[in-house]
Image (cartoon, rainbow, N blue to C red; front, side):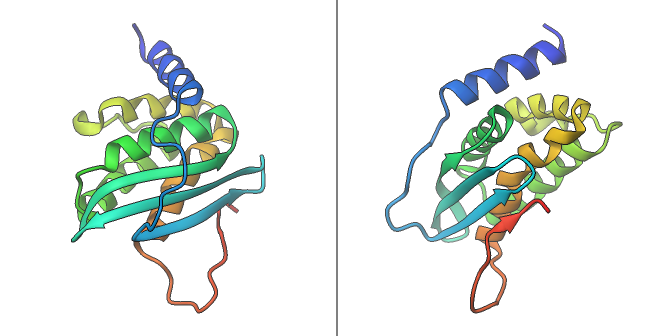
Length: 151
């Protein structure tokens, strides 16, 4: 199986059967994200144990890539410290935005997102959940929070 087949299979699977989809009662952190380009909207919820992500969930609607990326994100961050999530955020951002980037060995199923750079219009779809998670874990100090946007 080549990378394009892996990309397609993982995206289709996580879009059809998103993992960790639904609201979270009493999250420790959450943020809303919106991609005005294609209308994707989601909320990321995080439950923490100290600085470790105990649980991550999402809800909302969007294109197949947006839903699949959020599903993959929720699986990937469980059990990781906020610092490890920050590092993962950087690796995924690099994977999505740079053509010459090779997936880091520890990315697992997230490596399938490397196929997104072949479709530049979809990079924001795949990265929305990651930016939203980052906003949830590192909220701005503003009194009124606006939804995270890819614009």
